[in-house]
Image 1 (tube, rainbow, N blue to C red):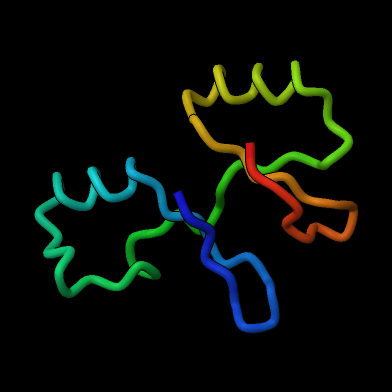
Image 2 (cartoon, rainbow, N blue to C red):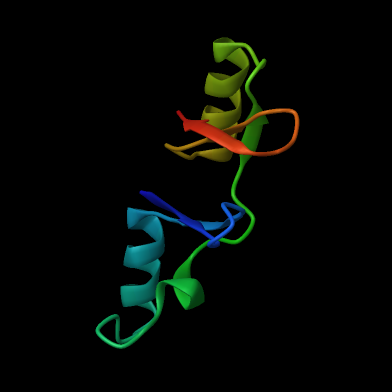
Length: 80
């Protein structure tokens, strides 16, 4: 997994192994595709004051392995 950020540090999206697999399954030529075309521009995020149990519950409910963690200004501060 990697995050995709703008030059000023704003989050643009996330690219995961799942995005890669789905791209290959759709027949996209990943040798020429740009990450911006394949990434998820609306990833799941939680605030940094969220309980770990809540994060786990969201990950299980959404069937995801990665959550982005933001501060109150919505700045990326971590990944779970």
